[in-house]
Length: 176
Image 1 (tube, rainbow, N blue to C red):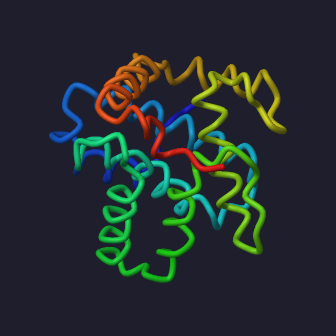
Image 2: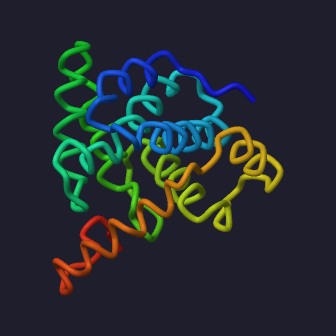
């Protein structure tokens, strides 16, 4: 299974210095989410949207040094979409990022990409325990080709630090 997308590579390379030692672990997470999106949505017209959302969905952790990273990630993706002359995608991709940690289904007349992206991230964050409609074997192949490289441990450390700083709001990124 080949994990390469030029849009993802360009975006991540622009942030390589900010990501520092976390570059590989974030890159692999980005690609796992991106690949899960593709497995759930056969519409080739959505590939670039998934690539952009995947690359930017957690980037605020590093750009703004915060665990409350949804709004910083959205600001970053909006600036990027303006720079590539795609302001027509801002609402959809911003919503993909804003809702990617929503615990329950995203029920709306909004584009299906938002719900697919949410599911893809949950598949990765849960190590494939939550699989929605994907086959276990497909999840295994994606995870095998793109090792975790400590991404989940990294998130647990951030979660613990945030809990120590903000015990009354330890999970600012989750939505019901």
